[in-house]
Image (cartoon, rainbow, N blue to C red; front, side, top):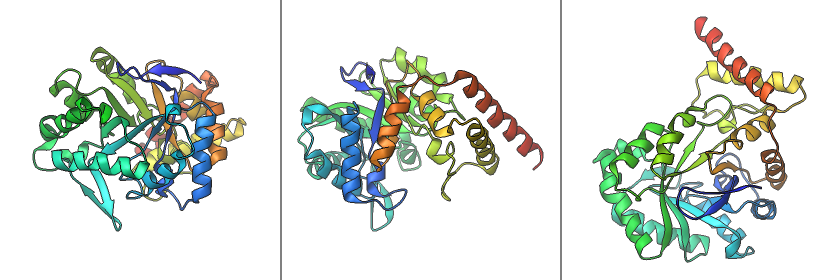
Length: 315
C-alpha cells in the first residue's frame, strides 16, 4: 500500500481508501457482522482512510461504521464524514446552513463513537446550487462554519465533494486560501471518463488534495452491469458492457482493470471504493497494488469510445 499526503493536510493516506456507503444498505441489504468484517479487512489490508456520510442509508452507514470502529484503535485510521445531505424515512433532505452543518458534525461524532473528525466535507455542493444563495452560500456560510470547528479542534481539515468538477473549482476559486483543503470527486477518473485529469493542475496549484471515488463508475465498469437507478445514458451503458465482455474474453475482469487504472495516478492521493463484502475488500486491495495492463486499458477506452459513437449514430 502506498501512502500519499492529501494536499497540505499532513495526512498521509492510503492510495486505496474505504467508502462506507455500502454499510448503509444503499445498494442492497447488508448484514451487520459482514459489514464490520469488511471494515476490519480494510484496516488489516493497509487502508487508513475511511469515508462516510449521514446521508448514506439515512444515518445507518454512520451507525454501523461506529460499531465497527469500536474494535479498531483510533490511530489506525483517518475518518471523513460529510454535512449538507440528509434523509429520514426514505425522504432526502438538504441543509447547508451554518447551524445545521455545525450540529451535524456533533451528531455524526456521536453515531461514530469518536470525539474528533479528521476531515469534514460539504457533501455534493451541486444541490446547494439549486437552493437559495446557490454555491455562494457554501463559500459565505457553510465553509466558514466548518473552519470555525477546525479552529476549535473539533475537526482536523475541511473539504468539499461533488460530481460536477466545475463546481469544485468554482468554490476553491471563490474561497479564502486554505479554506478548502481537499476535494472528493466521483466517476471522473475511471476507464470511461478521466475528466478529473484536466483539473489536477488547478487543484495542485491551490494546495488542494484530490480524492477520486467510484473506480467502477457506480457499476458501469462491471460484469454485473448498472443498477436501475444509474443515470448513464443507454449508449454509454451498452459501450461499457461491450468492454466488459471484451475483458472477460481476455480473461481479465473489467473490475480488476478498472481498480488498477483508477488507483494508478500519482496525482490523486487516494481512490475510494465501497463494499460491505470483506472478500471484495481484500480483492480490491490486491488489485490496487498491481500495475494495469496498459495495452488493455487503451483497447477498452477505444471500445467504449467507438461503441458510443456507433450507438449515437444509429439513434
